[in-house]
Image 1 (cartoon, rainbow, N blue to C red):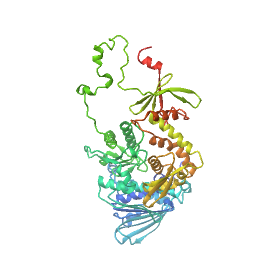
Image 2 (tube, helix red, strand yellow):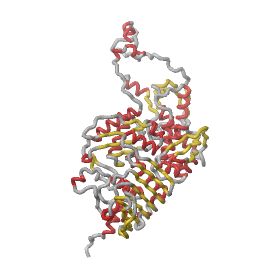
Image 3 (cartoon, rainbow, N blue to C red):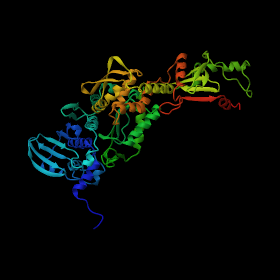
Image 4 (cartoon, helix red, strand yellow):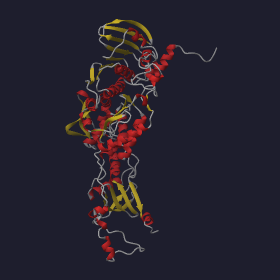
Length: 588
């Protein structure tokens, strides 16, 4: 008997289905794409059991006749391409002819479709085998019902998550395509409960902004800045919205290429690089990016689930990078500053150097070749007593507060030299340890708010937050779920300000991690979110502090468990010893 054998068609279909269908969200994605390719202006999605028990997608597209309805379930049967040349310039969302055959191989499927109202066809398929095909009355369009997903592949079914988690993933797909196609109406219901309702509108930037408001609420929309217009090169159009710094860390980042919803690593890497170079930080804001390119410049056949594309012209990403940097600068409220040479503005010279020539002429300064004195400062140094600081090891060190440099660094004169303390990361370390200690108890202390803070979320974010409410409440939050996907925050941990608490809740809601218990949420907050929380709540750069505030900050810093690094690993303290300074000035 030969060792190599040909697999039977049923097993081949189930193997192929594993590449296309991972979970209920994969089914929802494929069926929505088919509906949009059919010209639908209304797409209605209904789910049961998070999609594990039943998925129903109905549209008002072109529909199919009986022959096409049966042929659509054959592998690689498609109306969207006919040859290799068509594959080089795919303009539709689907094109391989794999979706329906893959879904039908691992579920019980019923398709009802009609080209003309009333004159329709109903096809029932189970495990890839046609059970019946009969006439049926149906309005123009198509309705597909997928039941008992993976009923015949138990090994795959057991890896599905809870109904709530699967529902959240499916909701992410629906809201993504609702953002991509504002000209189409979308509705999502789960066991009769409306989760998303978006009416169709005209295509264009303003409609896209209105659709963002429908999905995520007005609060986020107020913090979005439209990408600046630019030249159209070879029919290449880049448009969309980027969030201001207040949206950093929200995970609300969507990329659409030719209205295809993607998780494209190359495009996102370009965005992350633009943020780092323009904002000089790692806090990534919200992004709704639309790239409209000629189909022949985009290779969509590089990912089994069509979640990534490849640009046939690499310079597309370079042009995108420049456009994103301009948008990020606008989102931060920056404008080019007028430049003027010092010679044109003599009155703007530093005070310490005014009159230097007159003083040299009067003999107050030594001639070249003789070691000069340092320039005299034009301000009076702070007259502060020596501040004794006790470290965690019991070591007592005396420092004298010199002042603040550009509202960013605290300068200390120590016994061994000059110490520079970054006030932002120092406060970040202090807040991190405070927050962590507050959570070590059984339940963190909470403070009630005089007026509850409204938090608007998308359907998937609302599901995520409802999963974690119990754990958040054990950390000192008090949240109430309202209608329409909104939440009211009525109480926050005593260690947090309202804005920092709101940012934390938004971060949890947008998180993709699957934690469900209170202990897991607490661990998540301690190990991950506390660092981001303390960063957002810490005093910022260029913020003036009084001498008393600086002394208090330094005193608390040096009794911290780790005073020399912030939660992200950045240094807090830099020390320039006397020997270092003498070496830099050529004295040794």
